[in-house]
Amino acid sequence: MILKEIDQAEAAKSDRIVIIGGGTAGLYAAHELVRKGKEVLVIESGSEALGNFAPETYDSVGKTHEGIRIGRSQSLGGTSNLWGGQLVEFQPVDFLGREWLLDSKWPVTYEEVASYHRQTYENLGIGREFQDDALVLKQAGVPDPEFGKGLELFLTRWLKVPSMAVAYSEEIRLSDRLKVLLEHSVNGFEFSEGKISGVLIVGAKGGRQLISGSSFILACGTFEISRLLLHVASSDGGLCPWRNNRNIGRYFQDHLIGRVASVEIRDRKRFFNTFSTIVRSGQKFQPKVRLSDATLRSERILNLYGMMAFESSVSENLVYLKQFLKAAIFSRKIEGVGDLFRNLIACWKHLLPLMWKYVVANRVFVPSTSKVSLHIQSEQPAMPESRISIDPLVKDSTGMPKVILDWRTGSEELTSIRDFTRRVDSAFKESGMAELRVESGLENGDEGFLDSLRDNYHQVGGARMGFSEEDGVVDRDLKLFGTENLYVVGASTFRTSGNANTTFTALTFVTRLVEQLTGKKQTHPL
Image (cartoon, rainbow, N blue to C red):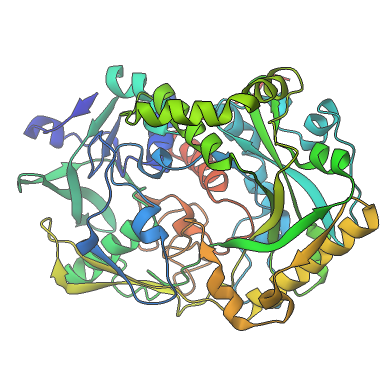
């Protein structure tokens, strides 16, 4: 049920779970909690219309970071309104830690997290038959390329409906156990002997209220989570349980992404069969190449993966059509019908092969004249100097301070990216499939090459999981140190970023948290 205002009786309910943030993790958590019989109130600062955070609420003073400006959305559905829905699993070594990578060991094991993979996939509508890379590749007729050089082929999976607001729209509007309060911001907490008894909210018109609950979940995104925790610690003084935690806002990370080489194909049939996107029963999979877990355990190298970018004279037209169709399917505001027809004319000769590849061959069509390049997504080390802070002297209309991001990169990224690119080049050459023309700045080890790489809107850290309050903000169960009933979800809790897009692992932790809060473990038929 959508609410724009909340009366005193509703605000005073204390037997429900309150979720701050109606984005990807928040709505997923709400959906799963309601399924298990819990009453949930979601508090979202945005509206149903797609919106951005006001520019006066944030600033970036370190390495250029585009994600703080365009990689997040203040609206129901949050960043899920902007992403393509790509799901990638973390690798075992990401949790195990590496001796040379400071503080990279997590308080939870890979096995604990992976035990919730299947359930999370199925909650998201991805059936068991689509969860095994080897099976999907075999059914698609893609043999193991056996790259060697410490590399392996793997698949990412894509949600059919990326927006959580759309995926859960019927439940949001009709469920009696789920209420979503829009256009209200949380700017404080009420404390009672280590417990959170309520959150203080501010409405669009300036009205203030106390919202009660039994448990509280922060799900408002990496920047806003740190912003709120830092604000409360600085303004509530002695009452705030986390007032002395110096890890809040620290260890910020993002993935570095960008082009590292052009690809000269030697065996076109084999290359395109290996790396073209696979579609089976409407489920999309994208083949990529990464370092094996064994390689990451044994060598001093950051975790990376590589993806192929196919460029052609009609690339922009095809992207436009894809976005137009997505907008139409998801009932978003559609403009530029004249441009649609112009793009249809430009793409007409590709439409039949596009449909054939999609429907008959279960692959996504790539024009044979496409230029191909290798792009990477790289982990970066977690550094305390890379951080989110606040400026308490500059506040918005809700009384919240401005967020200040100081994103830092380390010395390991350039070496690891060059090592990875050389491995791919060597593996491609030995297989007879292709070879690379590596960007000169990377090949020469020019530190300025990193300036050509950008963030990938995967904001990690600020409320990282720790073994204790000395090295983290939340415990292994995502509970904020010093509290009994305040939890944090999302990539802000990650200790390391690995090479993988962060959403799937974040939702896997939500699945685990829902089980803890409800005492109900979902079982799957054999």
